[in-house]
Image (cartoon, rainbow, N blue to C red):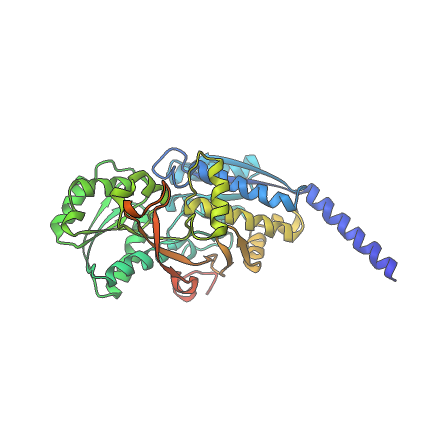
Length: 403
């Protein structure tokens, strides 16, 4: 009897080894390689995805994984065309990053129709796990709800009661303005004005002058990447912050602060899901990343691409092979939700029924020049926001998967 059990175990092990040997997966990193979000996502997201594959294959050397990438140019039609080609012609199984809410919302529907997997590690709109949620999508890093609650709530509670928004005129900006307004008003503040700016705007002078004339004591920058950098630089040139007006960077990345320089950005309050110098694990991951990209530390989007890809591959391995249920995008996402998450970038976490990945968020203030000890020593922590407080309650998201 023991001999039969041993033979059966050996046979199962052999079958599993063969399954891994036969298994292959193609990962497509759909990102901004040339536009305003290139520094915070772009080739860093491609590298982070590759690092996740390398780390996974240490335990599963026979598992074949290929990484491809493409530039969606922050255009939903371009992103959609690339995704269709990937699925129909190139055999791509999973899309990572997106780095644009408008692109993500368009591509997410195609991924659902094709029953693939979307690891939305870059886009911010909370609608991705709200009214537009999908059984094929996991939103990994942050969202407009968590960012707004962190930065908007903190500034409103500390006296920033009159807000003027400069908002990127597309899905992300609108969601950010909407979510931040909610927390400002809940804290007793009010929104006294707003203006919409096209993505990739170079000159924010007219928008900043409108904000200054409004009498607001907080200017909410509901934009990201190069648009945020230009907004902050030009606000400093106009002397807005010298007059006591506070800038609220609602989606600020360490790459933005590095580009601005600590003197221009000092005192800026930001909410992020990841910072390279949080703990030993984040420092270890960031050191490996920096060694391969010219010394640059990873942004939270890079960390999200790494973490999401690694967990996807773990789920695929838990299913045994790419064939059968593992070829089903919904099946893979269900397995991802079933398994707890763990990696260097984010530590331990879980994925909720609506596809929202849960982990702590952090409120930081950009250091003064005198406080910084190096090029990337940019943040000092203000508060850790536990996952259950940071993200929107499940019942409030209007996600059909929950209903």
